[in-house]
Amino acid sequence: MANTYTIVWLLAERKETIMSDIRLRQDILDELEYEPSIDAANIGVTVEDGIATLTGHVHSFEEKHTAERVAQRVKGVRAIAEEIVVRLPENKKAADDEIASRVVKILAWGAAIADLKDIQVKVENGYVTLEGTVDFHFQRSAAESLVRRLTGITGIDNRLRIRPMLDVLDIRHGIREALKRNAEIEAENIDVEVSGSHVTLRGKVQSRRERIMAERAAWSARGVTAVEDHLTIEEPKGRFNS
Image 1: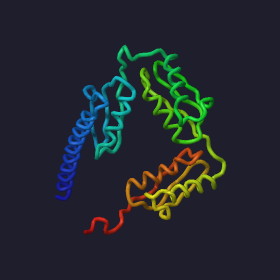
Image 2: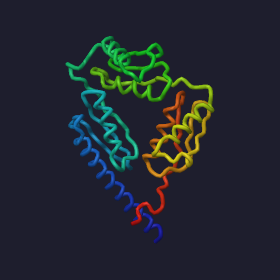
Image 3: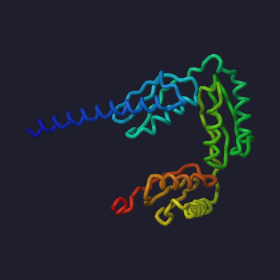
Image 4: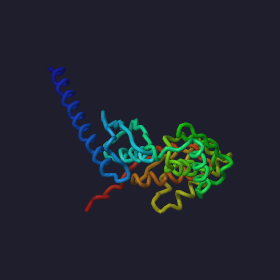
């Protein structure tokens, strides 16, 4: 009898999971349709156990990136498998040397990119590869963000490395001071550990936003190449009490 109950319970749980996936798929489709910067007509969505797979094609790499970002923000999505193909319209295609020239120019114009001599650009069939070194994580992200907007590219491989600092104490001190200066962060509840250029955050925060701000402060330190976020969210007691 116990085995029968177990089977019935498992079947009921599986049915609920399937129904949740169906609802989540529709939510993602609705959100993609709602986003004005992409054409969702040729994007397909499948969901299994909260993991969404995006398929189909779009007309630019920026559109592809936006579709993934839109799907990620839908409540209930655990992970994204992105398999969208970029199909450039004929009037948007460009030769690789022309794309490479555009990449160099837009990086030179970007105020966040300090020194272009440390960045190498390669383009093959519209696919851009960035190599070299930068001082900060935000510079690595900014370079990709700038290139992503260019017409004619089909993808980006961001291989930019962050130039590590040698003084671990300087990194830790800089992050600690940044946490203290931020009005949205209770710095005394956060422990900062630094090993080489890797930072680990431990402790408690009161909201998801505080957690994001703490992680951002860690990434903002010069030479940081990795941040492990082990912060736990613990809302203050009585927060919703009348």
